[in-house]
Image (cartoon, one colour):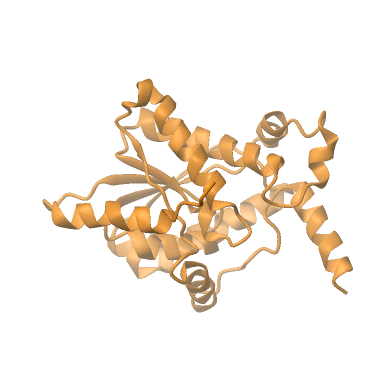
Length: 226
């Protein structure tokens, strides 16, 4: 199957907003995994959308890692001019790691524990976090929903966007008020820009995706590359 360029699709959607601008920005719920990954996305979209960031990441291990990433995100929102100027808001959901273990079923399907990124474990994790965020967006009347996940070069943007599109289609027979905003934020130098912003604002960057298995697999890869 031919891959879809979701960055181009995003640009088409954004161009429609600029043509039909009436002074009111559409609302966007942005699921965020951490401060560094949010940085470029906020810079890119905060002038177009009224952004509320939704921090729901029960996959992150250990607990102090979860809160460290959250604090980096909060720090960035208090110092980044675009976030302050456009009044980017933050909603923090509960941290319950059991959500992750139940959704991925890794305790029963132990083979998933050794998967590298982009596999079935990751797909289930993406769906968990995006589904919860989508539900919040719909219940609270947001115009659009998306996630920062596609900014990582380690993430499968096709998989991420397919999950989001499926969530929209499943809502009210495909007639959901909230729309899923397709994206591939790593494109057009997005990932590089996120690293530049992280350096500029002194953001701490983690070296693994988040779950205990990605942490373990990252250590294995480091040992293999020595």
